Length: 237
Ligand code: OAD
Image (cartoon, rainbow, N blue to C red; front, side, top):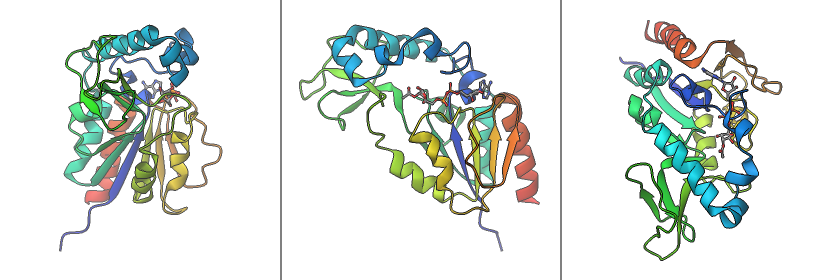
């Protein structure tokens, strides 16, 4: 009789895309070193400083169009051959999807989408990189990047909590665990026995994690394939 596949949930942050050439936020070369969050990533900035906000995300979008998934994204997607895998990402790029991951939940929005400023359910794919400043949705409202700004609620958080609670194994890749509520997802595992594997060359804030924690101190393109090979050996024997 075939055994039920293990449920593996992968929770990712900017670090998983760092090896694809996309800057993280809080590292020494990170985006928040060169930009102020309050200038480009808050609802107030969109009102006061619309051109700068739109320009910031146009730049991110233009840059992301040239980026490809790295071995970390690909290894995560490959687990679908032998495990029941869901990805929850804080990233707004689409590199998990490009790598072949079929179930990806974006907590902080998606760069390749725009939405009505009035109706959050009017969401559009953007063709190419440029959001024109005066582009409007069909309800007549101006369009804005489909990004969760600081100070806004995180509509996919409840969905993400349920996904994490369904995990037999949680893998966390490339996140400083500094931004809430996203960072609190690691506490939504079903019980204290669920192992948490962390792949990150730095030191994310894991002080409060009480589950078995295995920190693989490598960059994503190296550490994730190693971990995936190890889990495949353990789970498919
Ligand atoms: P951070 O920039 O806060 O953290 C990046 C993490 O990636 C750090 O723990 C680094 O050690 C790690 N890292 C760096 N290089 C890496 C590599 N090559 N491989 C693997 N890991 C690497 O990014 P996030 O935790 O994702 O939100 O930030 C969370 C949120 O803050 C983002 O989603 C974004 C940001 O402001 C919004 O914009 C709403």
